[in-house]
Image (cartoon, rainbow, N blue to C red):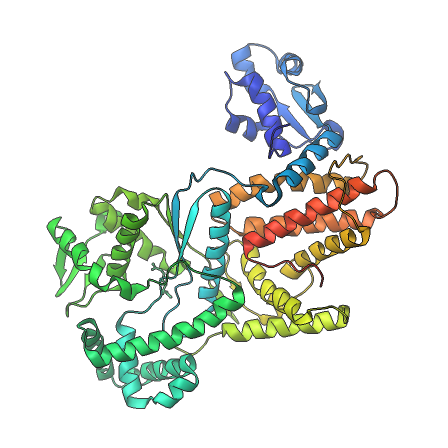
Length: 567
Ligand code: ARG
């Protein structure tokens, strides 16, 4: 049997060898059905579509096809009415799958699809002087998982933290700091106090609109390089970044670049000039815009009436810079779905400029996290503090461990792995576009469909292997008499296809759901059979346990979740 084949792919290939002139792989894949009863095999192929080309009745075609197919990988192939039923040779399939997993080790499921193409991933990108929000956490962990998944299939991901370190809000912050701030307060707790000033600014500006003008004026000064404005901005940025870094350290996530919005200050003029040269820039009430009516989009505001640049101006410069630097295969932006219009505008403007590579820009949106049904808003002070979430998750993990496994060595380290893993996994197990209400109790639930459940399944497998005291015989001649063993094998064989699907759909939840299903199936197997009984199947059973543990660890690693050996 060939490498990395799940059952369906194996059958598609068998059929394609006989039907190459009539159907392609995708068509065969579409047509294959899972029979209602396993007595009818693992998959069934309906022959009706061939009636036209072969000028025969489907029953006859089914009979003829059985004779044309390669029977080697199967227990049997038989015609049943208009269908061809495939019965996999379970023993052989199990052996081939386990051999793949052991031979390839951590490279099981790797692909070369990406041909080393660069994939910059714009991710996390919190705003300076504000706490990192749950939305930024989503972007961070989804982006990190996508980087791992894309690396596995042969791309070269570049993780870019496009810090929100520029914009009118810094003018407002400077005004607020001058009016109500103190150096001592900021030094003691930078983000909380900067946030406090910012929230106060908005409250007061509602009564006194002149504050907004002052804020805008200070931002203009900042853009013009005023030393005081620059000094304050630099200070706010440095302190904020140090706070963010604490969270990244706890999550175990690194970046390749922290080039944020400010990095593009001197890279916008060429873009604006180019827009002008291409006659794309139009005046509108004193500002400069690109009209996008033909694309059914609101106009892109490139320069304000006072000459200040905007969010999209910086994104145009950043996108262009990334293209020239990386010649990317694709350029991902993991940003909330509330910015969908922004990314459509960005791509539309680039296309108008003649940048065809804009087609390779992919906005990977995700749903909103609400709290008690309401939007979280930094301005209104309705925020969930990420550090608090991580602290409490780790605390809960600690309590859980103390109750279940009081003698566990490195309990603190394991509590960190489990608590942080719970938060990451919770975020990744939902389809990324689903919105969900945030409740700490839900995030750190340790039973059911959670990260700790997957971690625990792996730890359980590890404990069996420790008890067995030696490495499994990697031949794995397993007699598959147990449906849970067969299901486990089938899931293990599906891992490579699952990784490809997660990449194609930009959807780490595909991996998270896979890990949950594999855990569940494995736990059923574990409950059904006495794995450690010394009979002639012992080594084969241990091989299955070892392979499962290996694949669970890989799935968790792709998600950025650690896998403690004991918990
Ligand atoms: N800082 C922005 C925010 O918090 C996200 C930036 C997303 N990336 C981008 N290239 N626009 O909303």
